[in-house]
Image (spheres, rainbow, N blue to C red):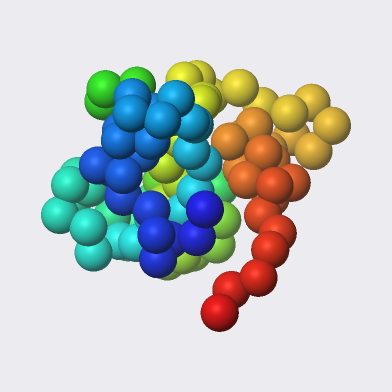
Length: 103
């Protein structure tokens, strides 16, 4: 799911009301995101921080200096790494399933 549509409340609604899981990026200006995950000025490249709440996992990943990617998932609950690419499974699954049309 694209960051335009994803939010914590939407992920919870999908999971409990419709029995659907969600994996998508999240915009940094959402008020429910802890400030520790948004501020990446002093974090090294390829560092990760996780936050979990109500069957949701939020990942803050710094692929490059001063770049922050926030990924929200109701499927992933750990920091498993893909042995082939040596990336987090959350990132690998997001990259493998992102396709479609943005209007």
